[in-house]
Length: 524
Image 1 (tube, rainbow, N blue to C red):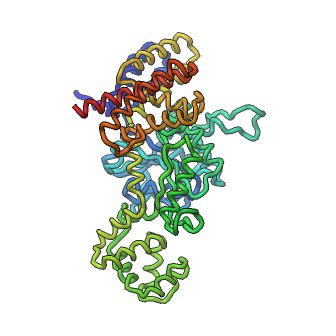
Image 2: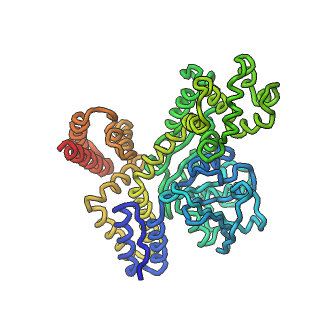
């Protein structure tokens, strides 16, 4: 009888899984149980938590990424719960209770998860949604309640997922004491924990608790802070930015959004790899089947209005829905709910430029206008392409934490020695690089700003041109620069660095040398 083999993200994850399997007989039953959980996560798709403040548009963005309008976006009980969207052969949603019980939750009439439950909400831990969706084959998306909510229980659920509860002090605790994060039973904690990466949603203003949540983000069961390896941010609702208020935007919404996103990236550095502007509502409507031929027909009618009437209607949502024109009020309200004024203007501009556009072509134009393609591109570049390294690094952090928690010096040493042997293998260099990047990003190793930026650049992407800071340059120039920087970092490691800096420098030297070898092989 054959058994299904774990689907590891790559050779590094497989190597860490082999380490866990080999060590299980050599550790305590409690540590071995933890290793089994690590093995389960290693064989599962990469888990990305979508987090952010309340009303930042997280669930709308989740629907756009999945390509199906299934996560409720209106405030209700379900939006106060953690929901894990994962691949399944049959569409279903399960309520998971704190005591481990599960109950199937039917979809509502529109095919969405109902926003309100018919059970005791306080007994529900989280939701598990299984969807026959290709996107979820290699990516589990975790939708979280919003930070900043007045609902303290929902905030706590989010904090527990992100690891923030470990760092938050309780008003009743003595000064200097931290609150123990043991309110969830083990079954529920294992179910909602384990996000290895985070997609953080912000709007125009980055607040202190946004940075605190990112600083406290925990991967797997060990305290690995968010960094450019496992976190990107999205500036949602880019269409609500007033371009006239942003210097250098020249009145263009997307230019204004890009300028704000760049400033936010600098503010959130080094917690995130990038901040990308997007219009979540437009993306959701265009990608999840919400845009219909009837909507296209209504927009065609609007495109035939005279300029004066049209510009007047676009002054505000109220004027758009109440102004006298041939398109029924109800239809205009529906368009506003699906596209908002920016999307409506974009669609009408496209139809005026090309009146023959079909509904399908118009939907594709709207999708292009949403910025979703760039978000997906960064998800692929930062998360999917590096899933093996991200998952292996998170797993090793978990293994280390489990060994330390055992209290057995002999067990800790056995685990430490096994990890060191693994890290000496040439294929494990990516883990060394991720470790070095984390040390620099967290400030554990102090580096001059220009060198810290270089470490972050080399370690935060899998694209050689971006790693070298020379994207689009000729192959020969890339090769020469990689060899030059390899030599520089080797000299710095030997003669100009502190012991901690030298450890990082040797890793960066090795990275540049491997890049040079790769480019040389490609040229051959």
